[in-house]
Image 1 (tube, rainbow, N blue to C red):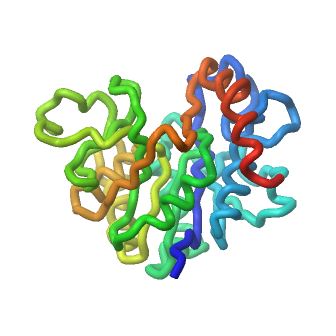
Image 2: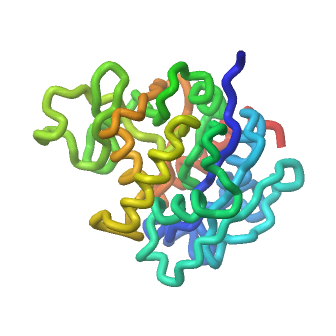
Length: 269
């Protein structure tokens, strides 16, 4: 039996300050992937890739600027917006946006569905979603790029035999990861299995209610708790499948000039 994705949540409520020199008034998730106004944006790409991967329900968490935007891909792919109403977005991290998704009326974490959670500011070969969906095992999964640079800028994943135990920036060479293998760079794409929904909701609730950063927490903080509970596997890929995160003007230039022209041939529009 083919394993597929049932639902997906795209986190599109962030500030995107580091790329503001080129984005200006355009929220980062809505930036055109080829750099030309009116062209498909990050969110269009995710909707099309998720639809081709078989996702039946797709949700986007937006802020007061992004919420409710009608996307080009919505002409072919149904998706619904969930509202993060926070006025000061510097106080609301991606873990807070995920919390709004889990507590919405959509019943996303129903104990039956395989649910993808993903950042908005990434571009990737659509085969990666299939790779993630078809990975064996009943534990939830984090998609990890094994072709990485070991610097303090990347969120690196550490563990043993494909079982992640820690992830974060600046972990290399610290006592926390002594004796562990660096599995690669976290992509910001996760798949939560039905049996982990209660644990995920509980972890996210605790992070927002009692964690050090509370509403400023990122979804990586929640995933770290899931790793420590032994509920995560790593699904790793190499340079044969394209992936990049887009945080800076320099990375956006690479995306528009080199990466998107190649990726655009892989998904029907």
